[in-house]
Length: 430
Image (cartoon, rainbow, N blue to C red):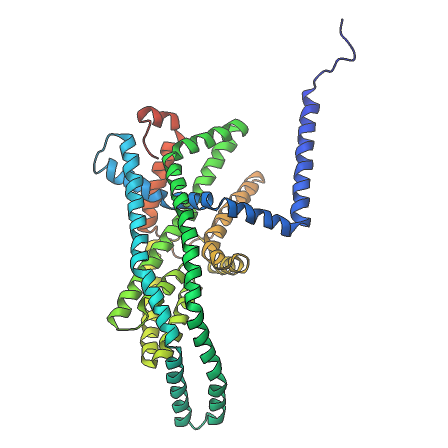
């Protein structure tokens, strides 16, 4: 005999309740984010600060992974024909970190002391640079009758106390600044050590991590959606890392060339100015000019001849980068139009400062790729076909991009068949 008061489950109402709970939860989160924006941002900042070592470790693993894969596949497998999978994985990670840490060590041993020496010398020479500049300005005004000498003299007289104050402030604050910088470097050093350990574990276990993510996607999503998600994530990774790595190599080459050419031309402050030029070169379009302005000002005030030589040198160097080196390394790695690149730099710089200017272009390139997929899907659902415009200059794939593309194909072949790959070699790195 059935009890009428007995509870009977209903799958339909249960599903409705689950959806209702999720909708209410999503509404609460959206309300919290919109109406308590400042506190929400502070929560994310605190979370990032507390997890900074793990975040940096993920970024390090993300950036060095192509080099690890290249050493493993191209050198240890194809050249050395090494059979032991565990040993291959260990050696590829070890060689990668020896290369990266060796480069950082060279910077710390050579570049950092040179930077400190250049900054100290620059602060000590400000009075002499000011005297040289004011003398040149007075002579220029005296030789040209159309310039009012009284205005020039008043400008120099007003500027003199400020320059002296600036020189005194730099000299007095240099030692406290170095002390604070040393403390910060020690803290960063500890964080970087932890981050490197995290990145090594991530690189060692990346096959397991990807396999678990793959299982989760296929467990909670339809098969078609899971496969599409994996493919989209791989393409986004290719766009982002391809641009960052190629631009970093391009900027490194430009910085090194700037250093050697400045030394050949006997220009002062070569290390300081070359570091500025190399770092700012990471910013598309504006970067070369941003990096050239400080060096041009410093060298012009030091000696007008130095400023003219540096101006001609940096113009030729940037033309070489824009016409020869950049296209060969970058190719059409982002697929963005110039107006979109300008928007990415402006928007990224406004909301994330220098880091936003660096990362704005690859982030917008990823967003454009995802938006293009969505638009094409909607057009396909409506059975609308719009042909693409013919390309005026068909893009040629750069050598670096070809290498990255082959690396990604190797990785994706191993990752799409994890069980088959593990049956062949349990410890083969992706």
